[in-house]
Image 1: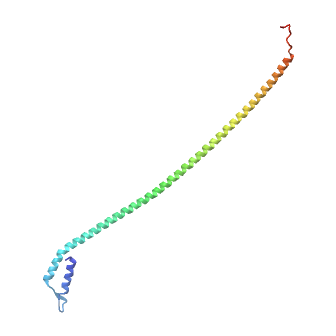
Image 2 (image 1 turned 120 degrees about the vertical axis):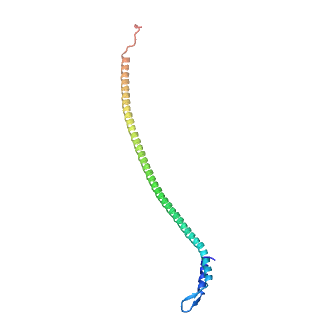
Image 3 (image 1 turned 180 degrees about the horizontal axis):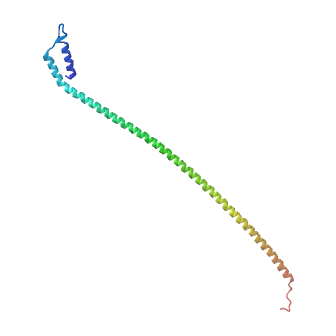
Length: 170
């Protein structure tokens, strides 16, 4: 029997005790009650130990559960912060990438514009040199033609003015 059953039995023995008239008291079997109390004394320490162990075990389980819950909350908070940081890092990286791309596009446009300007200046120089060369060539051609004309006229005049060689001169 466990402690509760012994207490129930003790209650039953007391309830069955003979009442003393006009006093509110009852007559009980002392030996029977003493046996029940002895059994109860033997059983209660075991029951109390078990109850104490259950209480301590319950508290240990609650503490472990609380510790585990705290760790889960801490991990979730850290994960949340990590995700926020990753999001912020991603946004910063995207912003830096956009800035780098914008800078590269601006530099490429600047290089292209500079190349076009260089090519335009080079073409203008080539054009000026070509025009100047053409003018000089035209002047040279004109001088050559003029000189040839003068030479032809001089050669013709010399040929006409020359007398044929005489036989005496031979």
